[in-house]
Image (cartoon, rainbow, N blue to C red; front, top):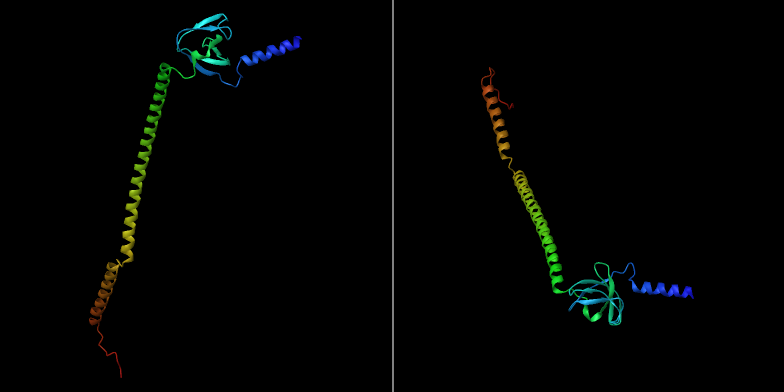
Length: 185
């Protein structure tokens, strides 16, 4: 009999508390100040009072009653009709302000990242323009070489050859030998 009683007590305790890995649901008190009761029902004694808008953790529920835990650790029962799962507007404002601040920080970080990327893009565009200019210069130089831009070198060679021939003719005329016809018949 004692064994059955212990098992029943253990089951009751396990049912009363949420599982270790299971988070308790948040809820808020609505309406007027309420009595936190020792058990489900108005016939149970009041443990303390909870104020409207107070944040609670829902531990369990039984019919029209919910077992809740206050921030100070007090556990008791409230009528489910006075507990709302959505945060009251005052609590939502604080949450939304925090979220807005977080989003502003994210936006500022994204703007900094966009500026850095824009700077990298501008640097890459400048480098591309420089490479394009250098490529165009080399292309023009190659076209000039391919198009026969070597004529000054050819004229210089022809002048050297003509000067050598003229100089040779003048020196031949000053030599002491007689001219002979080249053709002998």
